[in-house]
Image 1 (cartoon, rainbow, N blue to C red):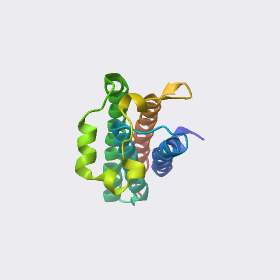
Image 2: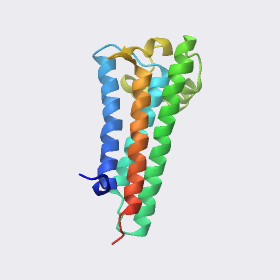
Image 3: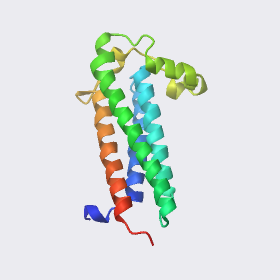
Length: 171
């Protein structure tokens, strides 16, 4: 299959699977393997859920019209921003927060307090570890590096989805 034959819908579905699947893996490692999340881990979960939701909306947009194509573009571009935010968050967790030994009242903490996500669904959104504790190695790499690599994959897929969207003809 040539790269030019991959549609934006397929790429968007791949983004949904990767981003939501990563949250599933995070929940598995939390509840089965005992790797507890920090506030920055939870922020990454939120960004991956958002990225997947936006990709789903982009995939469902009616792209046969110019207006539909613009709507799909807006969803895809916003999803790319969310993936970029996840990359920045993962790198911040790895290089700054995990190195400090604590996450005391960071932007991630304030976000979680303001949104009430931890109260709404604590098994998914409640931080239960410091950043240094949460950045454990998984198959030889720190968890935050896995997250950063996933964010890069999502950025590439998002860019390819936008390219495919605008290379296809409006019928």
